[in-house]
Length: 277
Image 1 (cartoon, rainbow, N blue to C red):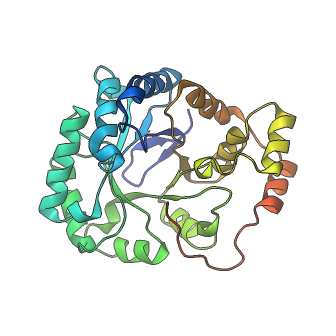
Image 2 (cartoon, helix red, strand yellow; image 1 turned 180 degrees about the horizontal axis):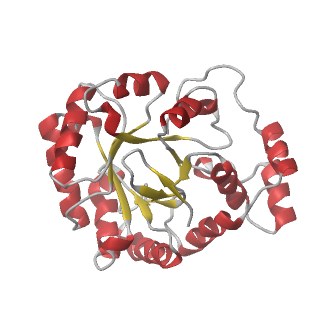
Image 3 (cartoon, rainbow, N blue to C red; image 1 turned 180 degrees about the vertical axis):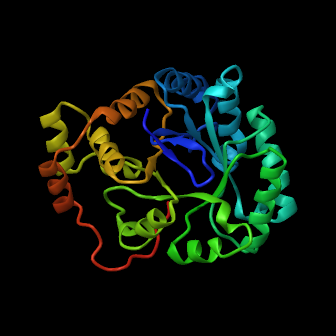
């Protein structure tokens, strides 16, 4: 598994498992647990979640997977903006830890920017880090201006990553945010790499996939893995999807294939506001 180094010095895998919409259905619970177990067996040790996912249900699913394997896992969770006051973020983190049945997170993120002053949230993250509850902290869904403001704050130099929507259909970050984060040494975590399935019927992707004997999802993920300083966290709720995601690590797209994708999905020519799902 390839890794990147966070500003904190931690190493993080470039490909992980996302858990959005997990923990919402009792009938899918064992399927989700089996998929995450299988991913860990393959070496997909990065698991991303949030208190929002299933209102804590996804964290409870993960707890059943990592009970005896915590040392193998790079565990990420996120706090709601309305819980991101200094006292609120600390309490929210404690609730996440309880649901996850662990005593620390490898990375804790502000899910998106809300009304709580950012300096207060970062102070909470710093306190959690000093207490050993989290190893690193960061943000999610922050545009360039948000990031520029954040790193100027007292605890802003501790921001380790920015998790944003990034895929072939959503390339707006390439003009400003992605180059800025690279310059600062802050990796991007790309969520929804296949645009919740909407990318799968694209003819350019399908043609490359057919030629290479892989799936369209694997091509889309491989394209993201080709990008510098980018971590990819596709949803991983079924064993077959986990296996396909893992196989994307070995898929190296050629220069002509990359050019074909640039033609089908042109990079931005002018600034685009940060998009969210």
